[in-house]
Amino acid sequence: MGKNGDPAIIDIRDVEVIAPNFKRRLSGVTSTIIQLVPVQRSLGQKVAALGPGLPSDLPHIRYRDLFRLWSPPRGRRCRIWHARRNIEMLPAIFMRDVLRMPMKIVFTSASQRRHTGWTKWLVSKMDGVIATSGKTADYLTVKNTVVLHGIDTNRFSPPSDTAEAKRARGLDPAQKIVGCFGRVRRQKGTDLFVDSMIKVLAERRDWSAIVAGRATGPHVDFEDGLKKKVAAAGLADRILFVGEHTDINEWYRALDLFIAPQRWEGFGLTPLEAMATAVPVIATDVGAFPELLVTGEEETGLIIARDSVDAMAEAAAALMDDEPRRKAASIRSRAHALENFSIEGEAKLLGNIYRITASA
Image (cartoon, rainbow, N blue to C red; front, side, top):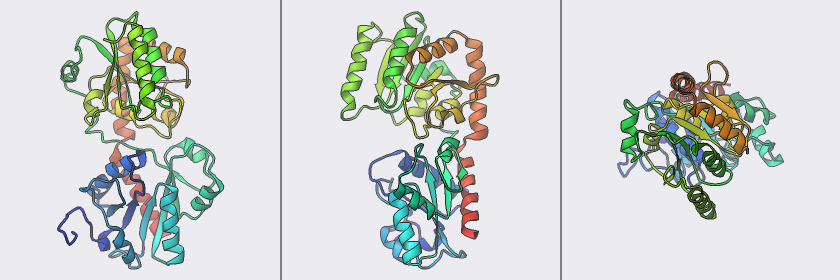
């Protein structure tokens, strides 16, 4: 507890792992830290965050606490500094190699492209490297361990009554709903989703679609264009733009099918959130999506070619028109997420890596 009595400030002597966040704007990395740190601490891992853009109630240390890193934590030879960006690797290298602070550095890479020479040099100085997917691991030239992201499978869980879940969101409970959640922009493939829905919904009056997410800056005009296209197709009452919501887990509970239409993605949590809510998924072959879904006999959904309205429309129609197949995929989706993608599982794997790295 700090001098101001704030219980979220952790005594640096009790911190064995520091999770820095040196970017003020909310990003996927920031979200990962916010979700992981409390779970890690609940498992007995002495982790604390550092940096701006984090909730005040998240267990954290202050910048001035860095001057005390010459002393290791109670009962340990060194601390772990878990970096997730270049800007977080560099100061750690300085503290470890120049200031000789007792510290080991772990880096998580989510990149799915060849690193620049500068990034390669930084990564080469790490004591441990984590890849967020097998595809990311293929781009690394150093030894690494794959740890797929997990999600809160309690927050993202099926409703007891789907019709009531729809009614609570202001949706018609008689309609089946297909959703696309995330930032509204071309990279995220929102236009592909809208165009494919215009193709399939005309002949399927019992289905509606929702786009949940926010358009910012230059992407507002992009969203406005999509809304005009929907209106011109006469589907404004069945392809709905519902905006951004903090209770997005409740919107998943109203779905019968989820589509992740991205043209590019680093990892992408939305298919996991949908599957944990027992919603089958259609996803493009980008990011970690092919590693998240099960296709074939035990399918939880379908993987389709990126940037193809026809492929998306065909896959959507196939699952919309086959209720037994969809319901079987729904059951398997929840089981698959629970077994392989809980955030507790991710935190346990990270704890193992911390222990191995600290003892090396």
